[in-house]
Image (cartoon, rainbow, N blue to C red; front, top):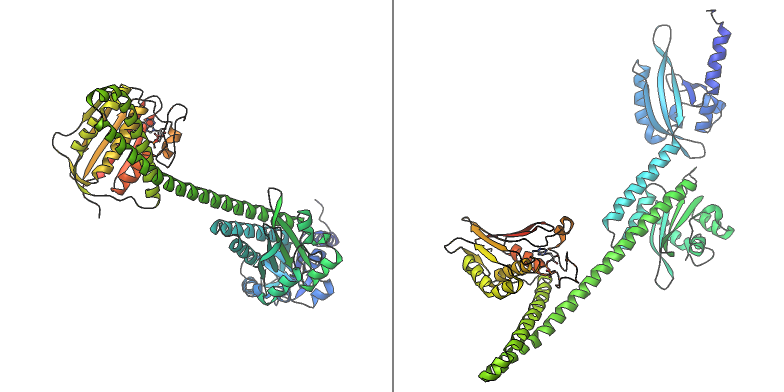
Length: 525
Ligand code: ADP
Protein backbone atom coordinates (compact mmCIF):
# COMPACT_ATOMS: atom_id res chain seq x y z
CA UNK A 1 0.00 0.00 0.00
CA UNK A 2 1.22 3.50 -0.84
CA UNK A 3 2.39 5.49 2.18
CA UNK A 4 0.20 8.57 2.66
CA UNK A 5 2.14 11.82 2.60
CA UNK A 6 2.38 14.03 5.68
CA UNK A 7 -0.09 16.56 4.49
CA UNK A 8 -2.65 13.80 4.20
CA UNK A 9 -2.05 12.82 7.88
CA UNK A 10 -2.41 16.43 8.86
CA UNK A 11 -5.61 16.76 6.86
CA UNK A 12 -6.98 13.65 8.49
CA UNK A 13 -6.15 14.87 12.01
CA UNK A 14 -7.58 18.29 11.22
CA UNK A 15 -10.84 16.72 9.97
CA UNK A 16 -11.15 14.52 13.09
CA UNK A 17 -10.35 17.44 15.32
CA UNK A 18 -12.64 20.05 13.83
CA UNK A 19 -15.56 17.87 12.76
CA UNK A 20 -15.79 15.88 15.98
CA UNK A 21 -19.16 16.04 17.72
CA UNK A 22 -17.34 16.01 21.05
CA UNK A 23 -15.16 18.80 22.43
CA UNK A 24 -11.39 18.25 22.17
CA UNK A 25 -8.85 20.34 24.03
CA UNK A 26 -5.09 20.13 24.42
CA UNK A 27 -3.47 21.75 27.43
CA UNK A 28 0.08 22.01 28.67
CA UNK A 29 1.06 20.44 31.98
CA UNK A 30 -0.15 23.51 33.91
CA UNK A 31 -3.61 23.14 32.39
CA UNK A 32 -3.25 26.07 29.94
CA UNK A 33 -5.12 25.54 26.68
CA UNK A 34 -2.96 25.18 23.59
CA UNK A 35 -5.49 23.82 21.10
CA UNK A 36 -9.31 23.56 21.24
CA UNK A 37 -11.87 22.53 18.66
CA UNK A 38 -15.09 24.35 17.82
CA UNK A 39 -17.32 21.95 19.75
CA UNK A 40 -15.25 22.49 22.90
CA UNK A 41 -15.74 26.26 22.52
CA UNK A 42 -19.51 25.74 22.20
CA UNK A 43 -19.65 23.53 25.26
CA UNK A 44 -17.80 25.96 27.51
CA UNK A 45 -19.37 29.04 25.91
CA UNK A 46 -16.10 30.79 24.98
CA UNK A 47 -14.12 31.66 21.83
CA UNK A 48 -10.85 30.02 20.86
CA UNK A 49 -8.95 33.26 21.53
CA UNK A 50 -10.42 33.52 25.04
CA UNK A 51 -9.56 29.93 25.82
CA UNK A 52 -5.94 30.18 24.74
CA UNK A 53 -5.48 32.71 27.55
CA UNK A 54 -7.06 30.47 30.18
CA UNK A 55 -6.33 27.24 32.05
CA UNK A 56 -8.77 24.37 32.31
CA UNK A 57 -9.10 24.98 36.07
CA UNK A 58 -10.25 28.56 35.33
CA UNK A 59 -13.42 27.17 33.71
CA UNK A 60 -14.05 24.38 36.20
CA UNK A 61 -16.71 24.87 38.88
CA UNK A 62 -14.90 25.78 42.13
CA UNK A 63 -16.35 22.74 43.90
CA UNK A 64 -14.91 20.39 41.26
CA UNK A 65 -11.41 21.90 40.89
CA UNK A 66 -9.76 19.98 43.75
CA UNK A 67 -10.68 16.46 42.64
CA UNK A 68 -9.97 17.26 39.01
CA UNK A 69 -6.48 18.71 39.65
CA UNK A 70 -5.42 15.68 41.64
CA UNK A 71 -6.21 13.32 38.74
CA UNK A 72 -4.72 15.77 36.25
CA UNK A 73 -1.41 15.89 38.13
CA UNK A 74 -1.27 12.13 38.47
CA UNK A 75 -1.62 11.78 34.69
CA UNK A 76 1.06 14.43 33.97
CA UNK A 77 3.43 12.39 36.18
CA UNK A 78 2.98 9.27 34.09
CA UNK A 79 -0.27 8.09 35.72
CA UNK A 80 -3.09 6.46 33.75
CA UNK A 81 -5.70 8.33 31.68
CA UNK A 82 -8.84 9.24 33.64
CA UNK A 83 -12.49 10.01 33.11
CA UNK A 84 -14.29 12.54 35.24
CA UNK A 85 -17.77 14.03 35.40
CA UNK A 86 -17.57 17.67 36.40
CA UNK A 87 -19.08 21.11 35.95
CA UNK A 88 -17.81 24.01 33.87
CA UNK A 89 -18.95 27.57 34.54
CA UNK A 90 -19.87 29.49 31.42
CA UNK A 91 -19.26 33.27 31.30
CA UNK A 92 -23.01 33.90 31.74
CA UNK A 93 -22.84 32.06 35.07
CA UNK A 94 -24.65 28.97 33.81
CA UNK A 95 -23.36 25.50 34.56
CA UNK A 96 -22.59 22.83 32.00
CA UNK A 97 -22.03 19.25 33.10
CA UNK A 98 -19.38 17.38 31.12
CA UNK A 99 -17.82 13.99 30.91
CA UNK A 100 -14.08 14.50 30.40
CA UNK A 101 -11.78 11.73 29.24
CA UNK A 102 -8.18 12.88 29.78
CA UNK A 103 -4.89 11.31 28.71
CA UNK A 104 -1.27 12.47 28.38
CA UNK A 105 0.58 12.87 25.05
CA UNK A 106 4.26 11.83 25.37
CA UNK A 107 7.35 13.50 23.88
CA UNK A 108 10.32 11.65 22.32
CA UNK A 109 11.76 10.97 25.81
CA UNK A 110 8.54 9.27 26.82
CA UNK A 111 7.52 12.08 29.19
CA UNK A 112 4.13 13.75 29.23
CA UNK A 113 4.26 17.15 27.56
CA UNK A 114 0.57 17.76 26.64
CA UNK A 115 -2.77 16.59 27.96
CA UNK A 116 -5.73 15.87 25.73
CA UNK A 117 -9.33 16.10 27.02
CA UNK A 118 -12.27 14.70 25.07
CA UNK A 119 -15.34 16.42 26.41
CA UNK A 120 -18.99 15.49 26.14
CA UNK A 121 -21.85 17.72 27.28
CA UNK A 122 -23.96 15.62 29.70
CA UNK A 123 -26.09 18.45 31.09
CA UNK A 124 -29.30 16.92 29.73
CA UNK A 125 -28.62 13.60 31.42
CA UNK A 126 -27.77 15.37 34.68
CA UNK A 127 -30.97 17.39 34.43
CA UNK A 128 -33.03 14.22 33.97
CA UNK A 129 -31.19 12.63 36.89
CA UNK A 130 -31.97 15.65 39.07
CA UNK A 131 -35.63 15.53 38.03
CA UNK A 132 -35.82 11.81 38.77
CA UNK A 133 -34.06 12.15 42.10
CA UNK A 134 -36.39 14.99 43.04
CA UNK A 135 -39.45 12.95 42.06
CA UNK A 136 -38.26 9.95 44.00
CA UNK A 137 -37.39 12.03 47.12
CA UNK A 138 -40.78 13.72 46.80
CA UNK A 139 -42.54 10.34 46.58
CA UNK A 140 -40.74 9.19 49.71
CA UNK A 141 -41.84 12.36 51.46
CA UNK A 142 -45.40 11.88 50.25
CA UNK A 143 -45.47 8.47 51.86
CA UNK A 144 -44.31 9.88 55.19
CA UNK A 145 -46.99 12.37 56.28
CA UNK A 146 -49.87 11.72 53.92
CA UNK A 147 -52.49 12.80 56.44
CA UNK A 148 -51.28 16.39 56.76
CA UNK A 149 -51.61 18.31 53.48
CA UNK A 150 -49.89 21.46 54.73
CA UNK A 151 -46.86 19.58 56.07
CA UNK A 152 -46.63 17.58 52.84
CA UNK A 153 -46.62 20.75 50.74
CA UNK A 154 -44.10 22.47 53.02
CA UNK A 155 -41.82 19.46 52.69
CA UNK A 156 -42.23 19.42 48.90
CA UNK A 157 -41.44 23.11 48.44
CA UNK A 158 -38.29 22.78 50.58
CA UNK A 159 -37.24 19.72 48.61
CA UNK A 160 -37.80 21.53 45.30
CA UNK A 161 -35.60 24.46 46.30
CA UNK A 162 -32.82 22.04 47.13
CA UNK A 163 -32.72 20.79 43.55
CA UNK A 164 -35.03 21.81 40.70
CA UNK A 165 -36.03 25.35 41.69
CA UNK A 166 -34.69 28.48 43.33
CA UNK A 167 -38.11 29.23 44.72
CA UNK A 168 -41.26 27.19 45.16
CA UNK A 169 -44.71 27.98 46.43
CA UNK A 170 -47.78 25.85 47.13
CA UNK A 171 -51.35 27.10 47.24
CA UNK A 172 -54.42 25.30 48.47
CA UNK A 173 -57.91 26.32 47.46
CA UNK A 174 -60.22 26.48 50.48
CA UNK A 175 -63.64 24.77 50.29
CA UNK A 176 -65.20 28.23 49.68
CA UNK A 177 -62.99 28.57 46.56
CA UNK A 178 -60.57 31.13 47.97
CA UNK A 179 -56.89 30.23 47.58
CA UNK A 180 -54.20 30.63 50.24
CA UNK A 181 -50.41 30.18 50.28
CA UNK A 182 -49.64 27.20 52.50
CA UNK A 183 -45.98 26.67 51.78
CA UNK A 184 -43.29 29.05 50.58
CA UNK A 185 -39.64 28.17 50.14
CA UNK A 186 -36.69 30.07 48.64
CA UNK A 187 -33.03 29.06 48.52
CA UNK A 188 -32.40 32.40 50.19
CA UNK A 189 -34.93 32.27 53.02
CA UNK A 190 -34.85 36.07 53.43
CA UNK A 191 -36.66 36.23 50.06
CA UNK A 192 -39.62 34.13 51.18
CA UNK A 193 -41.83 36.99 52.31
CA UNK A 194 -41.13 38.84 49.04
CA UNK A 195 -42.07 35.67 47.14
CA UNK A 196 -45.32 35.45 49.06
CA UNK A 197 -46.03 39.12 48.47
CA UNK A 198 -45.24 39.16 44.76
CA UNK A 199 -47.17 36.00 43.98
CA UNK A 200 -50.32 37.61 45.47
CA UNK A 201 -53.49 35.60 45.46
CA UNK A 202 -53.91 33.50 42.30
CA UNK A 203 -57.36 35.01 41.92
CA UNK A 204 -55.78 38.42 41.29
CA UNK A 205 -54.98 38.83 37.56
CA UNK A 206 -51.45 40.17 38.27
CA UNK A 207 -50.41 36.90 39.88
CA UNK A 208 -48.34 34.51 37.77
CA UNK A 209 -50.56 31.77 39.20
CA UNK A 210 -53.72 33.34 37.82
CA UNK A 211 -53.71 31.49 34.44
CA UNK A 212 -53.43 28.10 36.16
CA UNK A 213 -56.31 28.83 38.52
CA UNK A 214 -58.41 30.05 35.60
CA UNK A 215 -57.70 27.27 33.11
CA UNK A 216 -56.85 24.42 35.48
CA UNK A 217 -53.88 23.67 33.23
CA UNK A 218 -50.13 23.49 33.76
CA UNK A 219 -48.27 26.51 32.41
CA UNK A 220 -44.71 27.53 31.54
CA UNK A 221 -43.99 31.26 31.91
CA UNK A 222 -44.12 31.61 28.11
CA UNK A 223 -47.89 31.92 28.54
CA UNK A 224 -47.77 34.79 31.00
CA UNK A 225 -49.09 38.31 30.47
CA UNK A 226 -46.65 41.29 30.79
CA UNK A 227 -47.89 42.16 34.28
CA UNK A 228 -47.40 38.58 35.44
CA UNK A 229 -43.92 38.41 33.89
CA UNK A 230 -43.03 41.63 35.69
CA UNK A 231 -43.99 39.94 38.96
CA UNK A 232 -41.58 37.12 38.16
CA UNK A 233 -38.82 39.58 37.31
CA UNK A 234 -39.35 41.29 40.67
CA UNK A 235 -38.47 37.94 42.21
CA UNK A 236 -35.37 37.57 40.07
CA UNK A 237 -36.91 34.49 38.43
CA UNK A 238 -36.11 34.33 34.72
CA UNK A 239 -38.01 31.10 34.21
CA UNK A 240 -41.02 29.64 35.99
CA UNK A 241 -43.78 27.06 35.75
CA UNK A 242 -46.96 26.33 37.64
CA UNK A 243 -49.11 23.19 37.79
CA UNK A 244 -52.56 22.62 39.23
CA UNK A 245 -53.26 20.09 41.98
CA UNK A 246 -56.41 18.70 40.43
CA UNK A 247 -58.81 16.04 41.63
CA UNK A 248 -62.08 15.02 40.04
CA UNK A 249 -61.83 17.98 37.65
CA UNK A 250 -61.48 20.52 40.46
CA UNK A 251 -58.39 22.61 41.17
CA UNK A 252 -57.51 21.95 44.81
CA UNK A 253 -54.28 23.91 44.72
CA UNK A 254 -51.26 25.03 42.69
CA UNK A 255 -47.55 24.29 42.77
CA UNK A 256 -45.26 27.05 41.47
CA UNK A 257 -41.56 26.66 40.63
CA UNK A 258 -39.24 29.52 39.71
CA UNK A 259 -35.53 29.64 38.92
CA UNK A 260 -32.94 32.37 38.98
CA UNK A 261 -30.14 29.86 38.29
CA UNK A 262 -28.12 31.27 35.34
CA UNK A 263 -28.82 29.34 32.16
CA UNK A 264 -31.65 27.26 33.66
CA UNK A 265 -34.88 27.58 31.71
CA UNK A 266 -37.84 25.35 32.36
CA UNK A 267 -38.73 23.30 29.30
CA UNK A 268 -41.72 21.02 28.52
CA UNK A 269 -39.96 18.06 30.17
CA UNK A 270 -39.65 20.07 33.41
CA UNK A 271 -43.34 20.86 33.17
CA UNK A 272 -44.08 17.14 32.68
CA UNK A 273 -42.04 16.36 35.81
CA UNK A 274 -43.96 19.02 37.78
CA UNK A 275 -47.25 17.57 36.54
CA UNK A 276 -46.19 14.09 37.59
CA UNK A 277 -45.36 15.47 41.03
CA UNK A 278 -48.76 17.18 41.16
CA UNK A 279 -50.51 13.88 40.26
CA UNK A 280 -48.63 12.00 42.95
CA UNK A 281 -49.32 14.72 45.49
CA UNK A 282 -53.03 14.79 44.72
CA UNK A 283 -53.25 10.98 44.79
CA UNK A 284 -51.57 10.92 48.20
CA UNK A 285 -53.70 13.72 49.61
CA UNK A 286 -56.89 12.20 48.19
CA UNK A 287 -56.01 8.79 49.62
CA UNK A 288 -55.29 10.38 52.96
CA UNK A 289 -58.63 12.19 52.82
CA UNK A 290 -60.52 9.01 51.93
CA UNK A 291 -58.70 7.14 54.67
CA UNK A 292 -59.54 9.88 57.17
CA UNK A 293 -63.18 9.87 56.11
CA UNK A 294 -63.32 6.08 56.34
CA UNK A 295 -61.81 6.24 59.84
CA UNK A 296 -64.35 8.86 60.84
CA UNK A 297 -67.17 6.75 59.42
CA UNK A 298 -65.91 3.71 61.34
CA UNK A 299 -65.70 5.77 64.50
CA UNK A 300 -69.25 7.02 63.98
CA UNK A 301 -70.44 3.46 63.39
CA UNK A 302 -68.68 2.27 66.55
CA UNK A 303 -70.18 5.09 68.59
CA UNK A 304 -73.60 4.29 67.22
CA UNK A 305 -73.18 0.57 67.94
CA UNK A 306 -72.02 1.27 71.44
CA UNK A 307 -75.00 3.53 72.19
CA UNK A 308 -77.47 1.25 70.40
CA UNK A 309 -76.29 -1.93 72.09
CA UNK A 310 -76.44 -0.32 75.54
CA UNK A 311 -79.89 1.07 74.83
CA UNK A 312 -81.16 -2.27 73.49
CA UNK A 313 -79.82 -4.30 76.36
CA UNK A 314 -81.83 -2.66 79.13
CA UNK A 315 -85.31 -3.34 77.68
CA UNK A 316 -84.19 -6.82 76.61
CA UNK A 317 -83.17 -7.77 80.14
CA UNK A 318 -86.40 -6.36 81.49
CA UNK A 319 -88.42 -8.20 78.78
CA UNK A 320 -86.81 -11.54 79.71
CA UNK A 321 -87.54 -10.98 83.41
CA UNK A 322 -91.17 -10.04 82.72
CA UNK A 323 -91.58 -13.09 80.53
CA UNK A 324 -90.31 -15.40 83.27
CA UNK A 325 -92.58 -13.65 85.80
CA UNK A 326 -95.64 -14.13 83.59
CA UNK A 327 -94.66 -17.78 83.07
CA UNK A 328 -94.43 -18.31 86.80
CA UNK A 329 -97.86 -16.82 87.64
CA UNK A 330 -99.71 -18.92 85.06
CA UNK A 331 -101.58 -21.92 86.35
CA UNK A 332 -100.66 -25.43 85.23
CA UNK A 333 -103.32 -25.59 82.52
CA UNK A 334 -102.52 -22.20 80.94
CA UNK A 335 -98.80 -22.93 81.12
CA UNK A 336 -99.28 -26.15 79.14
CA UNK A 337 -101.34 -24.27 76.53
CA UNK A 338 -98.69 -21.60 75.89
CA UNK A 339 -95.61 -23.75 76.43
CA UNK A 340 -94.70 -23.92 72.71
CA UNK A 341 -95.16 -20.21 72.25
CA UNK A 342 -93.07 -19.53 75.33
CA UNK A 343 -90.34 -21.75 73.94
CA UNK A 344 -90.26 -19.78 70.68
CA UNK A 345 -90.32 -16.41 72.47
CA UNK A 346 -87.50 -17.48 74.80
CA UNK A 347 -85.43 -18.69 71.87
CA UNK A 348 -85.95 -15.48 69.92
CA UNK A 349 -85.18 -13.43 73.02
CA UNK A 350 -82.04 -15.52 73.47
CA UNK A 351 -80.96 -14.81 69.87
CA UNK A 352 -81.65 -11.14 70.26
CA UNK A 353 -79.69 -11.00 73.53
CA UNK A 354 -76.72 -12.76 72.03
CA UNK A 355 -76.67 -10.37 69.04
CA UNK A 356 -76.88 -7.38 71.37
CA UNK A 357 -74.19 -8.88 73.63
CA UNK A 358 -71.92 -9.38 70.62
CA UNK A 359 -72.37 -5.73 69.65
CA UNK A 360 -71.69 -4.69 73.23
CA UNK A 361 -68.55 -6.84 73.34
CA UNK A 362 -67.30 -5.34 70.11
CA UNK A 363 -67.69 -1.80 71.39
CA UNK A 364 -65.98 -2.75 74.64
CA UNK A 365 -63.14 -4.40 72.76
CA UNK A 366 -62.76 -1.34 70.49
CA UNK A 367 -62.61 0.84 73.60
CA UNK A 368 -59.98 -1.51 75.07
CA UNK A 369 -62.40 -2.57 77.80
CA UNK A 370 -62.42 -6.35 77.47
CA UNK A 371 -62.05 -7.31 81.10
CA UNK A 372 -61.13 -10.81 82.17
CA UNK A 373 -61.95 -12.48 85.45
CA UNK A 374 -59.32 -15.13 85.80
CA UNK A 375 -60.00 -18.14 87.99
CA UNK A 376 -59.13 -21.81 88.23
CA UNK A 377 -61.18 -23.37 85.39
CA UNK A 378 -61.55 -27.00 84.28
CA UNK A 379 -61.73 -26.87 80.49
CA UNK A 380 -63.09 -30.41 80.17
CA UNK A 381 -65.99 -29.78 82.55
CA UNK A 382 -66.68 -26.39 81.00
CA UNK A 383 -66.86 -27.97 77.53
CA UNK A 384 -69.19 -30.73 78.74
CA UNK A 385 -71.49 -28.09 80.28
CA UNK A 386 -71.58 -26.07 77.06
CA UNK A 387 -72.29 -29.15 74.95
CA UNK A 388 -75.08 -30.09 77.34
CA UNK A 389 -76.63 -26.65 77.13
CA UNK A 390 -76.40 -26.60 73.35
CA UNK A 391 -77.74 -30.09 72.77
CA UNK A 392 -81.14 -28.71 71.63
CA UNK A 393 -79.37 -26.64 68.97
CA UNK A 394 -77.40 -29.67 67.75
CA UNK A 395 -80.55 -31.75 67.67
CA UNK A 396 -82.49 -29.14 65.73
CA UNK A 397 -79.73 -29.06 63.11
CA UNK A 398 -79.27 -32.80 63.07
CA UNK A 399 -75.61 -32.62 64.07
CA UNK A 400 -74.05 -35.42 66.07
CA UNK A 401 -71.35 -34.02 68.36
CA UNK A 402 -68.49 -36.13 69.70
CA UNK A 403 -66.10 -35.00 72.41
CA UNK A 404 -62.59 -36.42 72.74
CA UNK A 405 -61.19 -35.16 76.01
CA UNK A 406 -58.95 -36.35 78.86
CA UNK A 407 -60.91 -38.19 81.55
CA UNK A 408 -59.33 -36.11 84.34
CA UNK A 409 -59.88 -32.34 84.79
CA UNK A 410 -57.75 -29.99 82.67
CA UNK A 411 -57.16 -26.91 84.74
CA UNK A 412 -55.88 -23.50 83.79
CA UNK A 413 -56.11 -19.88 84.84
CA UNK A 414 -58.85 -18.65 82.52
CA UNK A 415 -62.04 -16.60 82.42
CA UNK A 416 -64.81 -19.23 82.48
CA UNK A 417 -67.57 -17.06 81.00
CA UNK A 418 -65.32 -15.85 78.18
CA UNK A 419 -64.12 -19.37 77.41
CA UNK A 420 -67.76 -20.50 77.23
CA UNK A 421 -68.35 -17.70 74.77
CA UNK A 422 -65.46 -18.96 72.60
CA UNK A 423 -66.86 -22.47 72.62
CA UNK A 424 -70.40 -21.32 71.92
CA UNK A 425 -69.18 -19.26 68.95
CA UNK A 426 -67.15 -22.09 67.44
CA UNK A 427 -69.82 -24.73 68.07
CA UNK A 428 -72.59 -22.40 66.90
CA UNK A 429 -70.69 -21.83 63.61
CA UNK A 430 -69.94 -25.54 63.20
CA UNK A 431 -73.66 -26.19 63.55
CA UNK A 432 -74.84 -23.35 61.32
CA UNK A 433 -72.34 -23.97 58.54
CA UNK A 434 -72.03 -27.74 59.22
CA UNK A 435 -74.85 -28.95 56.94
CA UNK A 436 -76.12 -31.35 59.61
CA UNK A 437 -72.94 -33.42 59.46
CA UNK A 438 -70.99 -34.66 62.50
CA UNK A 439 -68.98 -32.30 64.66
CA UNK A 440 -65.94 -33.40 66.63
CA UNK A 441 -64.55 -31.51 69.62
CA UNK A 442 -61.03 -32.37 70.76
CA UNK A 443 -59.30 -31.31 73.94
CA UNK A 444 -55.71 -32.09 74.91
CA UNK A 445 -52.97 -30.50 76.95
CA UNK A 446 -49.39 -30.62 78.11
CA UNK A 447 -48.01 -29.02 81.26
CA UNK A 448 -48.10 -25.49 79.93
CA UNK A 449 -50.79 -25.37 77.25
CA UNK A 450 -54.22 -26.60 76.37
CA UNK A 451 -55.62 -27.21 72.87
CA UNK A 452 -59.23 -27.16 71.91
CA UNK A 453 -60.46 -27.85 68.42
CA UNK A 454 -63.86 -27.94 66.74
CA UNK A 455 -64.09 -29.80 63.43
CA UNK A 456 -67.08 -29.86 61.13
CA UNK A 457 -67.74 -31.35 57.69
CA UNK A 458 -69.81 -28.48 56.38
CA UNK A 459 -69.58 -25.85 53.65
CA UNK A 460 -65.96 -24.87 54.42
CA UNK A 461 -64.32 -21.54 53.64
CA UNK A 462 -62.61 -20.37 50.43
CA UNK A 463 -58.84 -19.81 50.84
CA UNK A 464 -59.12 -16.13 49.88
CA UNK A 465 -61.62 -15.55 52.70
CA UNK A 466 -59.58 -17.21 55.43
CA UNK A 467 -57.39 -14.20 56.28
CA UNK A 468 -60.35 -11.91 56.96
CA UNK A 469 -62.94 -13.98 58.79
CA UNK A 470 -61.45 -13.09 62.20
CA UNK A 471 -61.95 -9.39 61.48
CA UNK A 472 -64.88 -7.25 62.56
CA UNK A 473 -68.09 -7.64 60.53
CA UNK A 474 -66.33 -9.94 58.05
CA UNK A 475 -68.40 -12.74 56.61
CA UNK A 476 -67.74 -15.29 53.87
CA UNK A 477 -71.31 -16.42 53.23
CA UNK A 478 -74.24 -14.73 51.59
CA UNK A 479 -76.60 -12.87 53.90
CA UNK A 480 -79.50 -14.41 51.99
CA UNK A 481 -78.61 -17.94 53.07
CA UNK A 482 -77.06 -17.39 56.48
CA UNK A 483 -77.91 -14.73 59.05
CA UNK A 484 -75.22 -13.29 61.31
CA UNK A 485 -73.25 -10.15 62.04
CA UNK A 486 -69.75 -11.44 61.35
CA UNK A 487 -68.65 -10.78 64.93
CA UNK A 488 -68.36 -14.24 66.55
CA UNK A 489 -64.87 -15.06 65.30
CA UNK A 490 -63.66 -11.51 65.92
CA UNK A 491 -64.74 -11.73 69.54
CA UNK A 492 -63.36 -15.26 69.80
CA UNK A 493 -59.93 -14.13 68.63
CA UNK A 494 -59.93 -11.13 70.96
CA UNK A 495 -60.79 -13.31 73.95
CA UNK A 496 -58.26 -16.01 73.08
CA UNK A 497 -55.50 -13.50 72.46
CA UNK A 498 -56.18 -11.62 75.65
CA UNK A 499 -55.78 -14.95 77.43
CA UNK A 500 -52.35 -15.17 75.76
CA UNK A 501 -53.44 -17.82 73.25
CA UNK A 502 -54.04 -18.14 69.54
CA UNK A 503 -56.82 -19.28 67.29
CA UNK A 504 -56.34 -20.66 63.79
CA UNK A 505 -58.40 -22.21 61.05
CA UNK A 506 -57.93 -24.79 58.35
CA UNK A 507 -60.67 -25.22 55.84
CA UNK A 508 -61.53 -26.38 52.38
CA UNK A 509 -64.72 -25.46 50.55
CA UNK A 510 -67.17 -28.34 50.60
CA UNK A 511 -64.97 -30.36 52.97
CA UNK A 512 -65.48 -28.62 56.30
CA UNK A 513 -63.48 -26.55 58.73
CA UNK A 514 -61.19 -27.07 61.68
CA UNK A 515 -60.90 -24.28 64.23
CA UNK A 516 -58.11 -24.69 66.76
CA UNK A 517 -57.56 -22.72 69.93
CA UNK A 518 -54.46 -22.95 72.02
CA UNK A 519 -54.28 -21.44 75.49
CA UNK A 520 -51.45 -21.09 77.97
CA UNK A 521 -52.53 -22.62 81.28
CA UNK A 522 -50.97 -20.09 83.59
CA UNK A 523 -52.65 -16.81 84.43
CA UNK A 524 -51.54 -13.75 82.50
CA UNK A 525 -50.31 -10.91 84.60
P1 ADP B 1 -71.12 -14.95 61.48
O1 ADP B 1 -71.13 -16.43 61.58
O2 ADP B 1 -72.11 -14.26 62.33
O3 ADP B 1 -71.16 -14.49 60.09
P2 ADP B 1 -68.42 -15.20 62.52
O4 ADP B 1 -67.45 -14.13 62.90
O5 ADP B 1 -68.71 -16.23 63.54
O6 ADP B 1 -69.71 -14.45 62.04
O7 ADP B 1 -67.87 -15.92 61.22
C1 ADP B 1 -67.37 -15.15 60.18
C2 ADP B 1 -67.54 -15.90 58.87
O8 ADP B 1 -66.66 -17.01 58.86
C3 ADP B 1 -68.92 -16.46 58.66
O9 ADP B 1 -69.77 -15.51 58.08
C4 ADP B 1 -68.62 -17.62 57.73
O10 ADP B 1 -68.52 -17.17 56.42
C5 ADP B 1 -67.25 -18.10 58.16
N1 ADP B 1 -67.30 -19.26 59.08
C6 ADP B 1 -67.13 -19.24 60.40
N2 ADP B 1 -67.17 -20.51 60.90
C7 ADP B 1 -67.38 -21.32 59.85
C8 ADP B 1 -67.50 -22.74 59.69
N3 ADP B 1 -67.44 -23.57 60.72
N4 ADP B 1 -67.69 -23.22 58.43
C9 ADP B 1 -67.76 -22.39 57.37
N5 ADP B 1 -67.65 -21.05 57.46
C10 ADP B 1 -67.45 -20.52 58.67
